[in-house]
Figure 1: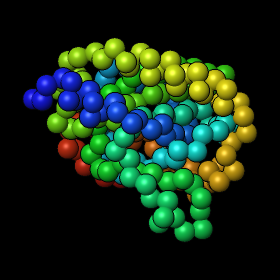
Figure 2 (figure 1 turned 60 degrees about the horizontal axis):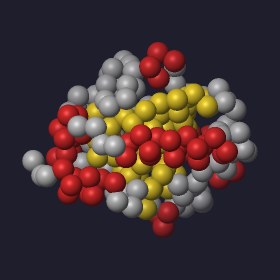
Figure 3 (figure 1 turned 45 degrees about the horizontal axis):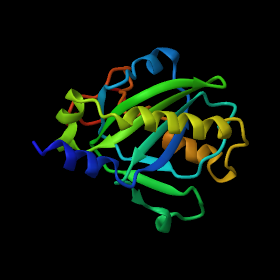
Length: 181
């Protein structure tokens, strides 16, 4: 395993903040425990456009990543500010909190090769990142949703919880997604 300083630099330098909103039950929200390492077998679509949440949605995933791929040039007839993360991405749950009646889950995108480091170590800047997210969202959460992403088409792309299967259990490493699992 790499030394901790290169892992920290590789993971935390030049982090960007992305979001995706959906509806998530309170039971599933509770499963995202601080420090948990999760994986998602599907591509993850998200946006850098920050605004309020649709009143019809109750959960916002905040993804901190420096490896997201800018897909805006490929958008046709949309201006979502689309970024993606590749299949089998890994995340550390930095925390979760309620904000003005909305469930917020904050994930740090980590590399597969470094997941054991993050499983076994706490990084001091995680707490600061979580506080920065809370501060940023506290002013945005009740503002109007961004028009371009407040659409049924966008929500069709983002209506699944990261890391959870349809049976409400977390994906295991390298497990593939198939409908109705």
